[in-house]
Image 1 (spheres, rainbow, N blue to C red):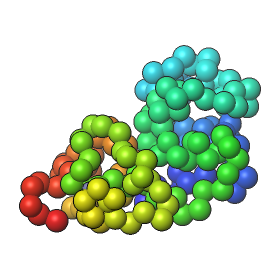
Image 2 (cartoon, rainbow, N blue to C red):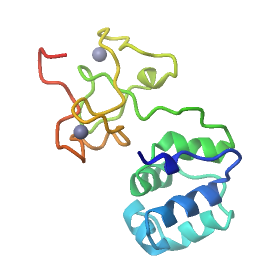
Image 3 (spheres, rainbow, N blue to C red):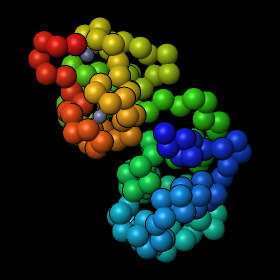
Image 4 (cartoon, protein in one colour):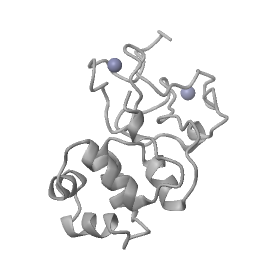
Length: 152
Ligand SMILES: [Zn+2]
Ligand SMILES: [Zn+2]
């Protein structure tokens, strides 16, 4: 689901933000509000005037558009998003609400380098992709992303 959120081939940051915003039925103002940035900033991004985003803007936009930060970074850099996984994390080591270890995000990483647990990128209960590690619980089914002790 939500495949429209994957950046298209050659899509610019401006086109991408505009397309996702429209897809979510948000006004520029609503998006800016949700992202915690000025609505003029959203306008500038969508007109292609802002090519480089600060970390704060990037993470705010990602949260507001419910897309992985990596998607935004990819369109900013003009890179192809090839079957970009959602955020990968170790269900044992990750601290809910905290940042994911960049080692887990490595495209080839399948297991946690700290404890050997298989990394996950989706809700164990319903399979919905994890789009933000700021969420401690799956927005669809309410199950916590982090495993309880002892069950894998
Ligand atoms: Zn681990
Ligand atoms: Zn779920």
